Length: 159
Figure 1 (spheres, helix red, strand yellow):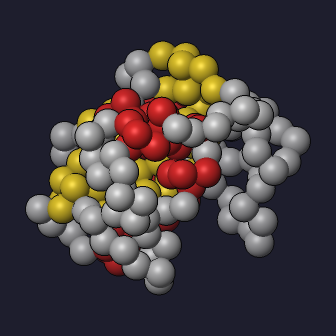
Figure 2 (figure 1 turned 180 degrees about the horizontal axis):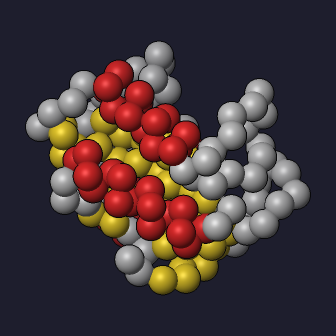
């Protein structure tokens, strides 16, 4: 079994989209660890605020199968794909970590972990003692030293 962490975001029908996404993930992967939900401003475009969270679970599925399943959940939620990643969306699910795999093809570990408060903080809530595969620091150490200026987030609720 491999420990997997996903970042989830939504700024269209946020609460319903997040709940539906979690239900779809649970039906595929079983028991989920779920961080609190945080609200943040849209990044890179003008748009409604996002709800963001991180989920963790263990799976025997290989990485390619998981990525296909995640894209299918996004599509079922009404996600519209375009050339730009900076658009409103019902559901955005990003594979953050697949065990300690370091892989350029799959962009792992996802750079968003060390770039964005809305990813790092909920990951820290779930796995503070987890060692980041390339930074060689725990997630809590990364959060403690993170410069969140200009990246205001606030916790809105627990699921």
